[in-house]
Image: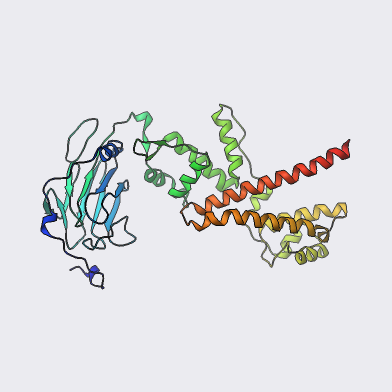
Length: 366
């Protein structure tokens, strides 16, 4: 027994009759999924055991399979060691290697320490009918090549992350899916439903991420800029405003007053009203201070804004009621989706408020 399995979490031995020399026949659906794979990916299909029917896309240079919850390929089976085997991608082939597991790995019925899985038929689609039984369950790995014209090469999510994460460290699969949901990117889909990204689409992602990171621009502004590009026009690159450049910074009370020109009395009234918290102050509080300072020239003081503060709190309550169910789902993209929904609702509230006031202004003008 391995040292890794000597902590009350023992790996069970599987019966000899689980080892077979013939690979199971793929179902039509599985064969279709295999045929849609790009040249540098493979599909791991579980044919027996507790995880029967599960599929795992191998699109990384190294994927570790085992019973450990943090394994790249998590297999909840007592015959699987915590770190059982690893799949190593080398160009358009894969090598499977045993990591010292109790039950070992089997290729075509023979126990091996390692095996290359790319020895198969050649053609426009290359299939590798290599039968593995590394986990006490029947696992079939099928790799297929779809030859693509060099001008229309498509990339998997994993490959996109490999290209972009050095520059955008917080990029994740859920972030890419969120950008897709917002209509900012449109990856292609294979017959099996996998997302594939063209080189043009990767450049589009870079534009979105760069404008978010460097210009602090909201997605709505970025979408309008991309729409202009899609229409064949050459729009000016959106620029950050002073407000967006301050985003994320922290300010002391002295800095806030010096930056905005807000007086001591107005600051004290605004603090009592709840417009300012304890220092350090956020960039949002600085923008509030700018607005308060500008209102002073009309004789409007913070104490006159109690109704505005109460109305805003009611709007926040409505937004919270809508977004809380989204956050409770605890999906990887829940936070980003909830933030987007909150922003959309806030913009609608702002539009209603703006037009109500605009009606009054029109009456004044007439």
